Length: 71
Image (cartoon, rainbow, N blue to C red; front, top):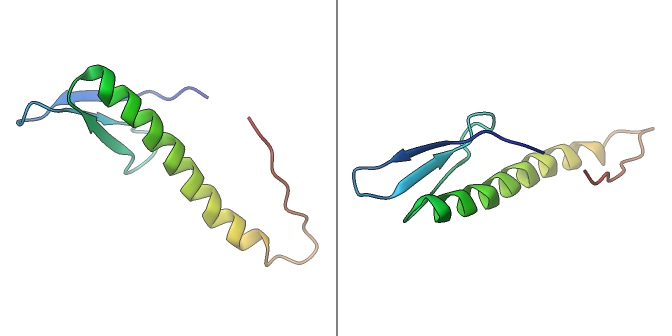
C-alpha cells in the first residue's frame, strides 16, 4: 500500500512525520530518513491496532467465518 505523509520541522529541530489518511498516526526522527523509517513503523502499528478492533467484533458475530488476508 502507498500512503502520503507530511514532514515538518519542529521547534526542537526534530522532523515530525504525519500520515493524514490515518488520524493520529504521527512519528518523528532526528532527520528526514529516521522520520520516514519511524512513520512506516507507525503506519504498520496503526493498521494493526485498527484491525484488532475489528477482529474482536468478528469473533462474536454468528454465521461469519473470520479469515486473514495478506496484502
